[in-house]
Length: 372
Image (cartoon, rainbow, N blue to C red):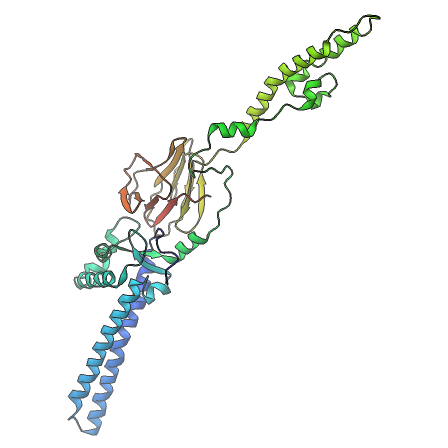
């Protein structure tokens, strides 16, 4: 059966959960020699009590031979499970073993290569600690690098895949580009209200501010001329209508400008955290364990139980040309994964972002795009 998460970006697992998963697998592996060792001990005691030791060597040979066969069989099953997304311990802890580039299954032979390299490295003790040598959030040990694998957080990946994003205040086709200026202007254009064209008969409250000032003059002129007997009134209403229309034009512009100013600013970038939380950035925003406050910037504290993030680790911002990330000279650095290629974000320099990019920093990561 194809895993529903296959092919998606892998969210790296924390070291503590990986250790717990390995402890479960190790406990299962130790049960086999312990059980057969007890069987061998019972055989020794039985033969000593009965006084017959003629068949003892054969019995012990069969017992410990069976132990070896079962241990090898378990190793093959263990390896096959890893090739299919994770061992018993990894699945119990909500982890998965995946291809570091595609996020898919690694297969039996790559899983076997990973276990062989792990055994050789562990034989010199240092192999147990090689995942700690990787400063990125992937925590790849020598065995992971040799087999091109990464241990991912299945629970976080499932949460990210099933999360429903609330609508953006100002949605755009591109998750981190503002809408075209023409589209915004069109949305705010409103036809002048009908009372403006008959300013002499409309209450002042119903007309724009620019038309109210000219309204009293029109009825006065019309009233004086209408009192002369035998003389037809000049076409004052037409003039009044023209004056009112000219007066209404700047008022309409003011209304449009006010509405545009009150509209919410579009998001410059939207992203999804490794735990499935989605968010949007509307301007220069600083991220870290406890980011310092700076003028013109928003500070956002990021949950980081392993203290792998710096206090002010990175910042996100953007404009009409696109979005970017800047590493703030963090301790563990910031990595950009794009189309399976891993790049280093140079501290203090802008790195342009695209939809689908994944940023990794310490034990946390986020994916660009997806709405917020």
